[in-house]
Image 1 (tube, protein in one colour):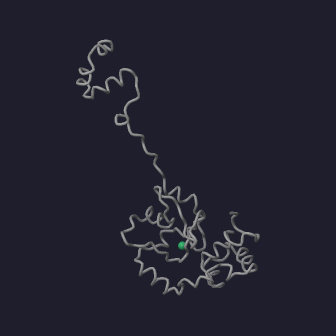
Image 2 (image 1 turned 60 degrees about the horizontal axis):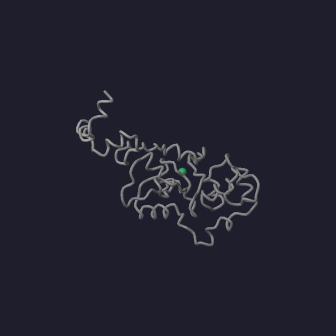
Image 3 (image 1 turned 45 degrees about the vertical axis):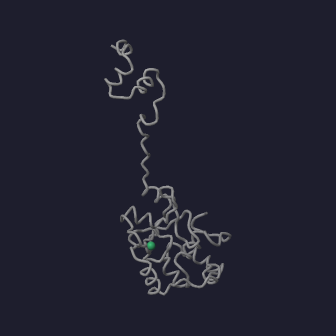
Length: 202
Ligand SMILES: [Zn+2]
């Protein structure tokens, strides 16, 4: 049967199998199939939730899901999502809540930039985001004061680290008059790296 097939002309085989003449030659002589005829490579399925959680450390007291990998200068987590840099908390929203409508912002209820807990996030407009900051009295301080080192002393950082796990980020932030993220960064060793007692080594 095979021999008979080989004796048939390329045209006859092409008609029989409903393929192009040139493809018959490719198959007959064991050549590599042209790109369009090859089965498409299955795309690897990325488990984005799992990927997000590789860099999240939940903070039991506040319930914040703290981002521990790369972050922006303002402490927002960054992750490469579909070949583009994306904010980690925005990706958390996409994965756990769904689409972010055009023009909408994902804002933090907890005012903690590294937090990715969707329960601590809400969809708002740019105005909402500003109003929320104003209401909480946490408008961004002038640049000079924004730097954590300007507010905390080495002794403060040592005490803050010693209290890790026994006090919430919020209560410490309140006490020292700094952002929650500053407390988090001091505790985790992202700032004041030269001092001992950081909860995680960078
Ligand atoms: Zn939070």
